[in-house]
Image (cartoon, rainbow, N blue to C red; front, side, top):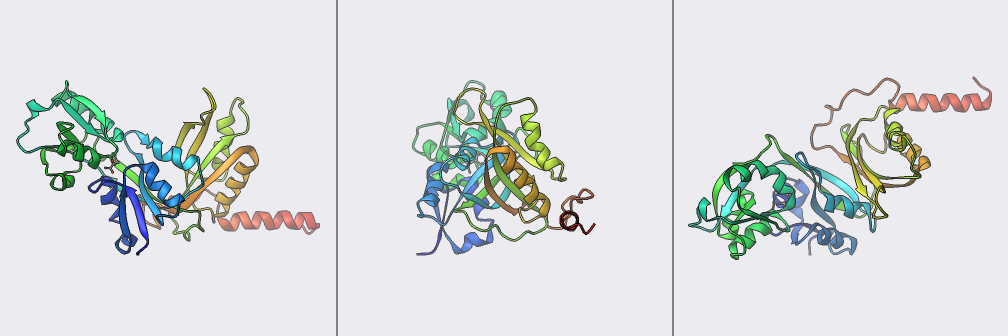
Length: 310
Ligand SMILES: O=C(O)C(=O)Cc1ccccc1
């Protein structure tokens, strides 16, 4: 049996389309799962080599189910990311007209991306969430809902037709997906990489979050995502999911992570992997004093001082 990738299914999700853009997907068996949790569990149990799931969109931010799964449970690692531009089609059974639509469904992350369209065109329609956008289409095929927001490409698979296409409240809406596997050595740096971590504060004090962020700032590291998630231990208790520019093999990143390890209650490393938004060589110039050579020269100098050779 070929190695398999689990993904948020059923067939016809945006997740599947994004997964198929990865060259390595062509050599794997792609297996749809009913939820992000079940796809990630397949990795944890060894049933799948890796899982491909949505993690963030440009309209609403983090996909909280995915973040919460990565924050807790047996550690997993992000190997790769993919960005996909998203516009929705309103899929219906043949013959349905706009006036017939009383109920609509889609993945919860779709709603903020079509809310204005709904208000303008179907203000009285009842919204119910589906496990994924393709699952919504499947439920319309079964007659459980009148319409689903999904990719236009999902229509044929579920015997539906697009009543409207190119629905998007926000221009250039994008969703970010990640390929997640069991902990492994990160891929070599490309020059345009991202490092994801989860941080738990040691104690609550004024500036506690600033102290964490300073570990990146003082080493010239730009942050790309900062999302708090409740720890489940009472109101006011949060951990922080952070994406930072750079690779754990960069000295500045390694030093920032060492700093965080010292000051945080807990740090979970989620991986260093190539950025999908820019090509290697397009990364922002480093801030003066933060290159690998400068970190090495500084640590050599301290060693010489400690030796009395300054
Ligand atoms: O992949 C899908 O179809 C999903 O259900 C997840 C999702 C939700 C909203 C936008 C893109 C992907």
